[in-house]
Image (cartoon, rainbow, N blue to C red):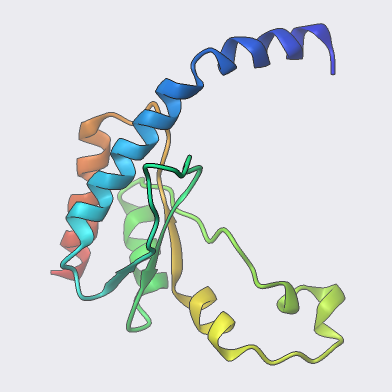
Length: 134
């Protein structure tokens, strides 16, 4: 690591508690908003101990891809963060069948989560998701 990278890293470490706190706030806001949405299954996470780097929901009823497209049209970037290992080329040759893993994979969607997101940004994500389901 270069001295410049080390200096940047040290400067960021001084802010880590603030970064984690903001991410927890956003996760809690998402959880509260989506708690009653029947098309969304929330992951159980204890944000008092977790330092979240992503926020993942499970979108039920084969609506993940249409929701992802809807959010893209609203200029809201989402992702599909984890491809099951057994679906990667190297492992596919073993012929594993993991139906529950594949079901989860077809439902997961990663929402925006960054310490620089404003409350307004988070509200826009939430309202856009509810707009899709309504």
